[in-house]
Image (cartoon, rainbow, N blue to C red; front, side):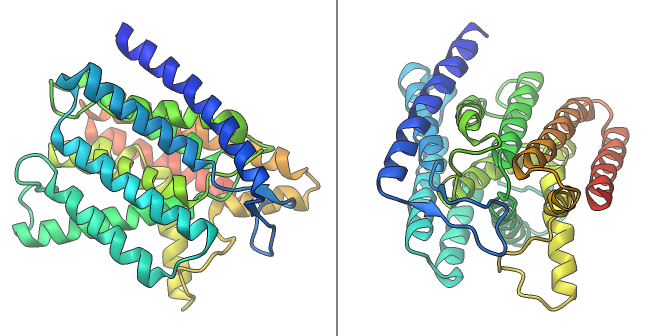
Length: 335
């Protein structure tokens, strides 16, 4: 435990330092996210802070490989390498723009490699489906989650809050499960990287994460969640990311039903509706962002507790998850 506390604090400090340094570089090179009609900000803001997040995670992984090889495996190194590849591609997308026809095949290939790296036979659906169908569906679900995670990064602090909660919750679950049920290596690094970044991303944000951060984070968290499901712990794997899954999933279904291009940017997520309502009431933008991100943080704290409870009582925990997430979405829609 002492090792993990020192590891987390050290990486959080490094993440904060790296974020400051990346912010200075982004400003110097004028890499800005300019406001447009779909934006939730009204002044040009540096974009690309996810570089600091990924540097922190890579450093954390390297420390574990060197200092605690008992906590790492060759497979986890493969996953980290895939995340770095996704971050590199996403940085090009942030600065120059890439079409979905380029991004999606790379997402699918990285997810296919990750499913191959799952424990045992990699059967996420626990034998309910033929092996080939299980494999293909797992790849598609993971790629969908990765893009959901990216799409949801729309207001100050939201993705750093979500990353901290999901990674922290997974670390807690790993501590409660039998040894080697879920690798702890990397989870503490992901959570620490998000916390350090949050200091400068909390509203009013001084910089944004960009796809260079949100895409590989969705990939890494997706792998850990699928790893948990493949071990038979489906309830916590669904509960921890339940808010992002519900907000992004319901919004996607609504837009698809109206025949809209679901891959295009928009302002129809539940949290975006809540921000818009707050602005209509006369709230300042940074106050609205702060309030909504704080509500999401509180909801995620409850989801972490429910995920831990689900190890002993999965059905009641899932039922309370539906009520908690549903109630939050209702409040956002009505705000």
